[in-house]
Amino acid sequence: MNKGIILLFSCLFTCIGSVLAQNDTIKFEEEDFSQYGNVEATTPTKRFCSSKVLGLSPSKLISLGFDYQGSSTITAGGFAGFLEEDANINFNYGKRFAANLPVISNTKLLLSLGLTWWDNNYSFKNKEDLKNPFLKTLNDNGLRTTGVNITLFKPLNELWYVLAQSSFDFNGDFRANQLPASNQLKVSATALAGKKVHDRRMWGLGISRTYRAGEQALFPVFLYNYTFPNKKWGIEALLPARANVRYTVNARNLIFAGFELEGNSYRLNNLMDATSNLPYKALELRRSEFRPRITYEFSLYKFIWVSIQVGYRYNFRLNMDDGEFYRSPGNDTPYITTNNLRNTLYTGISLNLVSP
Image (cartoon, rainbow, N blue to C red; front, side, top):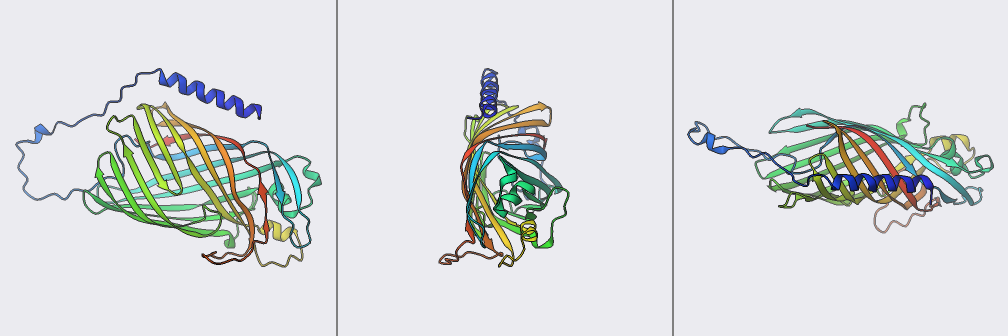
């Protein structure tokens, strides 16, 4: 096992052990409603539910992080006259930036705008010997995502709400100093309706057009946020994308155990430009991975939080298609090539500015 991964595991569990020794009591301020006993309402007031439940982890307004994946091997399938090739990856690494800021925030409407930048770089052993163009573009260019997203939360009354989210991302093998092309734009969207049962439970049902499985797909989605009566344990889930069991050590220390399905579809323009006479109109990489993980989040200073994550990267899909299309049930269109990336441990750390 990679020594760096072992060290990170050790540091994580040392930190967790230290915070578990802290005061276990969680206090929530309760409002004294008796002070309003003599107030007579002159006009009826419509009440609206909020977007959070009691004890939910704080929302990240700005996040800057680093993702590291351990050593693994990859088998790149043959295509267009290029032979299948095995290669060793020393490690994967990438930067992650996200901002999600409210534009409108009141009891009747919550509208926020976000920005994202993710990259995934590959460090190959004996990179000078690579022959397969797919491996070359991973080594030379990596994979990147950058875009904007919009989130709308609209309470209908004090129980029911609707939630909509849409993202516009450029995904491809463009370099960090290279502007993405218009044909690398991917649009995802989610819409659901739900109920705020009480201050500790809310749920929602809807549908999502997403690339988390690597290729364009439509999924039913289920949102469930719940804090148990003891206020120590909770669930934060948006299935099938992610789910976490939350343990609240105290108001400044949280531990999560769960998973995330992470993926996208990338237009490989640089691969196409570097390789002449390919019999394809546009190569698309369908990348998806399943990540079970443990996360420790704590307040460094007031609204500045740190998140440390360790887990396992399980490769779900890393195949190439010709062009963008929806592979509907019964569509047996073969992939141009199937690539096999072996699984490995991963870790991530981020510095976050959270909402009050």
